[in-house]
Length: 270
Image (cartoon, rainbow, N blue to C red; front, side, top):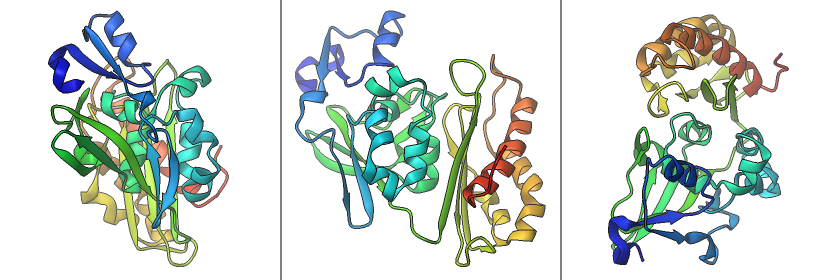
């Protein structure tokens, strides 16, 4: 159907972003292709150390999935705070990633969890990391006649810790920060780290050049958190907008990184 309708056809899943964009004439399609009717596209199951989430799985179904809560609880928690319950009950994870709305939560966390998307079309199937898939604000790496069919997320391991925090005043988040840590001794030392910032820049992005600052003994890492936060701000394309100035967002990174570090270790965060 995509090949038949060409530029006049658009894929429709939850429609929470698509219909709004069409209402404001940011997008225009003569034909909407409903992919929710494709069998299996809303399934969630575990395989070989990963949880596979069908593209039309709603945020609400992921939030409430016992399998997701068991395999990757931080993702289930994030989904419980996406927008509001009406949006969560309609909007889909696949649609969220495809629309690549800058002020959105899931992609930022999926970056640090090592999320991968499966893409299928007339030319066959392929996989891409979430980082490769989201090419910029409202831009993805889908090829012509191709759809996203699955989101693949590695299951958490006993030596992994992860957290996602966001600051939000208006309808959409001002800034979101995701943190993933590897610890062989229950939080006394850290052998690897990943951090990503979203909602404050054109697309969510990691800061791999500074992630080494978050490895080593806990006492040393805690001392380096302010420097790490400043480095993240320098490496991220923060933008002045109605949500706040660049300097304001830099300060948010400092606050959220410190809180995410404690939350990832299971400590109470005010």
